[in-house]
Length: 312
Image 1 (cartoon, rainbow, N blue to C red):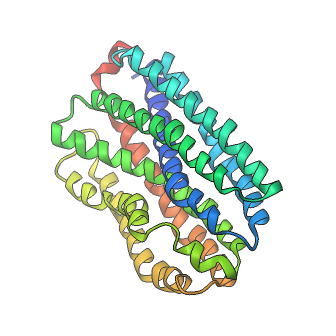
Image 2 (image 1 turned 30 degrees about the vertical axis):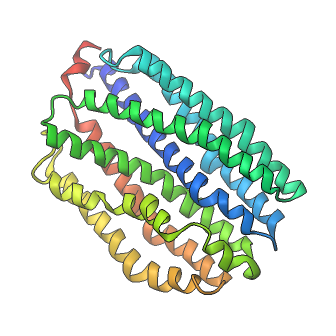
């Protein structure tokens, strides 16, 4: 059977748009509520901390934000014709607002801090601007994306559709939160210093971090169990089983190794060697499994064959 290249391009465009939009929202949430408030508690090595943050954010946050905008623009031409054009244009405008805030509000402040030092008034300005011009636009982008995915999955039964939709949203949102935790936060911890560590460590409330990061990471366990019985018909059971095996592995190794051996000791004292080992072991033992989860969900997504693409 010949390949319909228009259909293939549309599926890939929607998948990439979904990944980058949800990843961007996860990054924005972590920066706004976890990372940015911590600047106020870094004094001993503030210049080093800020320079490290700025250099890491180029690849963790800035470049992906631009790619997210480009993916939204691509939807103007590649989205299924059933998607309303006005919603696509609104998503592009929201993406532009978020990227402009990243490049022309966040970047200049971080650059200035690396030279002149921390300014509390600037930090309050930063948090207010990112709330109104990054968090809210990104959240609205996610709402539009969910409406697109709801339409895309319209042939699936209602329960199966919403279970899979939630898996997609949580999985790719978690892609953003984990990139901040592993690729930004752990290297930053090395620069904090012993004097500031306890105050720095206690800045984000544990409950807030638990909801934004831990809950989003492991909630899909329950959704994937439900997918054994309720899932879009094109998704094979072996993909569901594979996802569950990887996410159970991550849950167990986090609970039995990373929490007691790293997180608990670091709650009471600064230990540079322990922080370095945490970053290394996270890269070795958790990052590959995390990548596997993203690949599996993307594979599930590409398995879907909605009839709405037949008209493209």
